[in-house]
Image 1 (cartoon, one colour):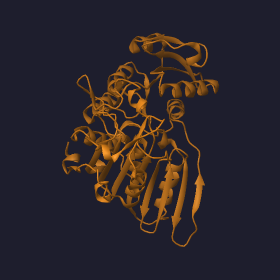
Image 2 (cartoon, helix red, strand yellow; image 1 turned 30 degrees about the vertical axis):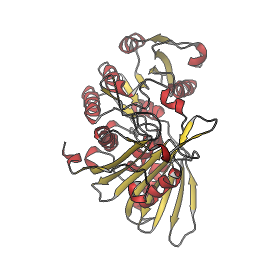
Image 3 (spheres, rainbow, N blue to C red; image 1 turned 60 degrees about the horizontal axis):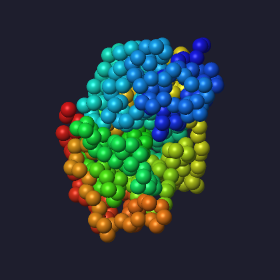
Image 4 (cartoon, rainbow, N blue to C red; image 1 turned 180 degrees about the horizontal axis):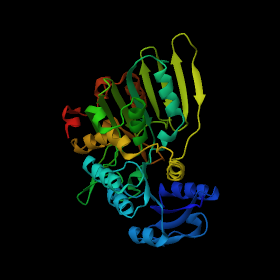
Length: 385
């Protein structure tokens, strides 16, 4: 098999991870970095080796390099148009999460890509974890009884500079276009997508209602401390709580509540803890399949894609509920403080609230957070469009 030529759009910021990953697969003989699309060309050091062809014109670069695969890691509002630019040329896609800033843009992308027949993988790397099928098997075997609900918790630390890293950072809209760069839709999007997936709620029609509580301690437009509760066609609830204003950074996790036990999945570590009646706690560590490698495998051997667009439809319903909710409430000055010397804002007690939300499937307001915003309900009509 000859190495597949790959073009990367967006090679700085998070794109640096993709540069390193493509180089890794290049050394394995699976792909070849044929081009980089950036407004400012990369240096040889940034490119991690010999410079490939570079251009700020994505379509022209795809044409001139003969790319078979494009990796799109650009600002969220550009995803749909760039994905369609590649698809119309027959170029297969790895599209970073979130795949689009609105459900309408997601459908335009997913339907447009499907019409061309190219393969598209959405970059929820946690869904490449071998723990995911292992957890599904445990649930199917009845290890924890019937699923009663799923919780997700993400308590992260981000300094104020994080929200100035790009013009779209911390924004809900920019120059009239949706961005929706909130805690649940971008940095901790994996917590939402993974919680939905483990509960068997992946497609848009699997979501029957959504409640949101969105707020921010930082001087931004989007949310940095928020939670969402999703009603599902399977009859259970999925509650995910997130903050970028934690007192201490913690590993994010998803918690499956069963009738006779529970499973905790630390998705960045590919590690699970199984707790059930009549047994001691059981901990397991798993490997992970890289999503670009899986895409290459799909193209060369017919292996199933791990994260095709329609399997992220439920996540995009959550993005849409957050997009259409009233703008997040600024937390009162008494609810947060700056950490001396670290230039970051902390909401005291939020670490515990995030964990409690995942544990009880409750919203911040139900847990008694004095600063919790009003709950916005988007029930019933969610699955009607």
